[in-house]
Length: 391
Image (cartoon, rainbow, N blue to C red; front, side, top):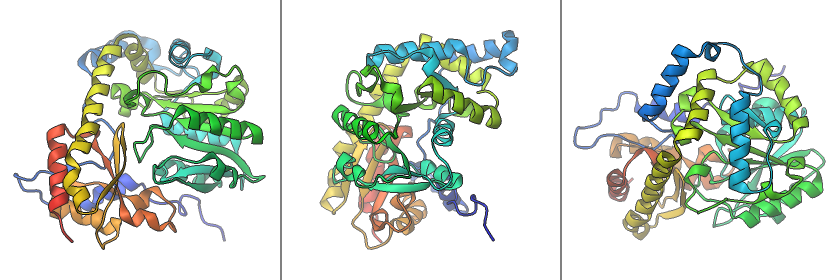
């Protein structure tokens, strides 16, 4: 007897961690520092909320079904922005709007994979990617990264088989914060093209990359859409997490297949969310640069305040965009450590076991810190609490 694929898939990690809060009382002088989820907790800026309200009140079409692949104006705006940012040429017909970036990934996999196929994921991996592959009947093949947490194309090449359909990279990375060099992405593109498989690049956190200029030049290749599938999210850029608006850039032929998936699942993306994303692209560039600067400052604060921990044997393996990824020195496994930190230190974070295969022992020594929702003062407090905690 077979079991449903959801039964064989892990429980949502963030929801699992939130249950550790049940029954825990945090004293007034030590409030909870919640660094478990990579999502803004503040609403969009007031001007954007006002624009959403105007759309709701004045634009009747904002309450109706729309095109399955998204609003033409938003698709065109994305194509134009990507062309200017990355160089090369991206056309509106190579862009679709999705109900968040997770759906963009699911749609890409649906267009690529059949039963029993395989997709290579760099580890530590984004757990929702692995969860979707499990639910789709696709094997998630872990690609181990080195001490710098960068994936190696030669190591990936050794994992490719006749069943491999894609390699997935997330940059800046979730959970590690590491931004992949352009040369690394080019090498993976060349590898995938040689094997006639897809390269899926998830750039959800691109707007918070500390580097200046285009993070890669993959779109400058005139034939980019024969190999590259790029994913992006407006959730972090404009604090639109609840509106679920993402993008996927790929070939028109693949979008025709993806349209089948999207029409079956959601029919069309959220109409108010799409209008909000378009208004943000047209009006919030300066505001977004301020958000980026604040995130970069918080990443710098991680480096400033890490010294007491490193003296105890902790290691900051990666840091950037929304995340710091740590290796701890304690004799307890990271799952136990993370749960104990809730009551004993007032910290809610995620253990590394949630970002690796179940049989990968490295996760027992790792923690992910999602620092985008704590300021520099709270980062100092976070590291002080971690330094003072003992098993």
